Amino acid sequence: MIFTSVEFVVFFTVVLLVRSRLRSFTAEKWFLLVASYVFYMSWSIRCGFLILFTSLIDFLVAWTLGRMDDSRYRKLLLAVSIVMNLGVLGFFKYTNFLIGTTALGLTWLGIGLTPAHYDIVLPVGLSFFTFASMSYTIEVYRRTIPPCRRIDDVLLFVAFFPQLVAGPIVRAADFLPQLAHRVRATALDIEMGFAQFAVGAVKKIVISDQIAPHVDLIFAAPGNYDAVTLLQGVLGYATQIYCDFSGYSDMAIGVARMMGFRFMENFQMPYSATTITEFWRRWHISLSTWLRDYLYVPLGGNRKGTARTYVNLIITMLLGGLWHGASWNFVFWGGLHGVCLAIHKAWMAFHPFASWNAPRPFRTAWSLCARLLTLGVVLFGWIFFRAESWAAAIQYVTRLMSWTNTGTRVLSPQILLAVAAVILAHMMVQKDRLWSEEVADRAIPLRIVAYSCLALLLACLAATDAAPFIYFQF
Image 1 (tube, one colour):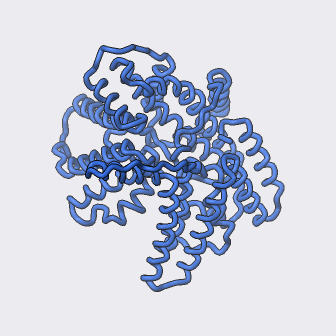
Image 2: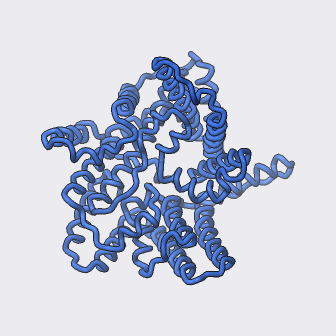
Image 3: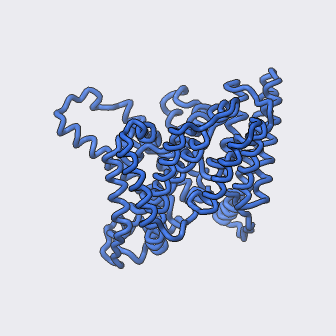
């Protein structure tokens, strides 16, 4: 059951209708909890018990943390939660990767070994609900929030269906207070939530799903295409993953808002960033801030000297890359961004143009160059993120960088139009403004026209086969 399916529309309609009829707040929360598990178990019944297990363990750990003052035992309890969550994550995502890497290392040492491979089914959205659950115990340990007295609050927080399988990563400190009292969506919430859902649906099934087959074709055999087609492929993938993931986030935020709940924004025009640091402030914001607050800062952040700051940045992004998948491609992708973040931080410390009062045309040209450089780094990284193997990524980069004319040239109108649409959106929409909060200030006729255009796009240009969201695999 995905957001763009008829089944979800029916499911969500039933949830709204039944919830509106429940008079007891406790009954309402239990109903939402059951509905969330039904939503998740539409993929796998067995994996639903995994969410229940992690949620129960973290509830008990946090409950005990709230009644304990001894710092040593508190650290031990927090370690239990972290080890349990990361252990579950590691087993499902990294078992085969670790076995294969160990076998490769032994082979280099002259010890021949045929690695075993286990058919381990990765639960949908495992990384998302694991990180959400960990945020609860960490915040209770830090005494940022009190432990929940009611188990249904914790279970619902971890399993709440809008954000369950692909984010945004909702934190306990942000969501649990919304369960302290009964929330109801206003007419404005319903309108804004529906509008954001519709925009997300357009991104997903009008843009991302339409170009996905064309991008897949290019990345499946990069050796068959010339450099122009390969450039088109990486631009297409950058567009595809942005529209796919930000589209899901928009729909999740919209669904939650139609029920009266608020989630943080997860994307803010990331491809218009002028630095790699700014890119990560605008791309997958819930993950980048999670890594910052729960990994980078505990490592020491920028408090232990310049060299240690750079090391902490690289370690954080390496682990962020590994979070995305058990592959050296993801490790390289994370390492690339970590090194670039460190370089940018060093550049800002040096900053030869801090007091540069050049004429506006020169500053505009400088800003344009900075945007192109940042985008170039991001696009280079996407090749390794998307390629099916390390060898395929190297082949892709080699043929693209050499600007080879050998191979087939294919121009996909779908990719070119999608890329143009995303570029236009990044140019027209101010990245620091949340349009969903400003629509209500527009005249009603203008809003009707905008919603009609969204409906027309969905009716006329939606892909016939809705593909699973890319981040379901993470």
